[in-house]
Length: 235
Image (cartoon, rainbow, N blue to C red):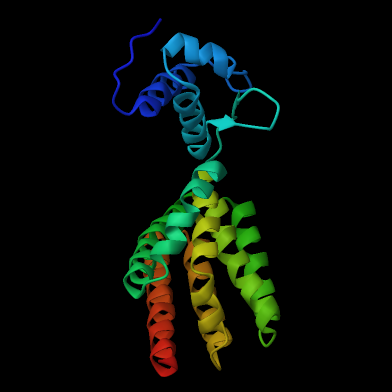
């Protein structure tokens, strides 16, 4: 029997199980022992075992279904983002939180576009150009323009071939959805945004990381400034 300290029993049970998962003693897809067996192994009651399993489920490490044993989940970046989505939305309910996310997006996307300009293949550049053309063709159609705006930025995110970048980009798009609705509904902003996108594309096509980062920064600063300008008129 494994000796367990009496304080915060479920956290200590979870820590041991997490270590086994991390060390691949419990590989992805493997079933955990039954609750009764875990109770016996750790010398704790059923509540501590269940809370430990729920804790690991919230971390994205376990899948739990009624009537079945807990199973080690196949790790994914999406699961990580989903696990923090609730906290992100809470932070975005306050102006200070929105500003923090805008700053984080600025840092992320300027670094991302710098990598895109440095790493883009000819095929990548064609893909970004196709997204830019779709953005241009959707000017005047608010809903379609919003979609093509996201599509243009996503095309840039795919260039470095890093799944963490694309998943994080999609999460930020979801978390800052109010900013996109507000700014792109502002008269003339479709054309302003497209012009900025075109400048970003040209810098990527020229494989100029500094210029690409500069154009992206100016674009996102303009969007953020406009968002707060419109918000002020609504209060």
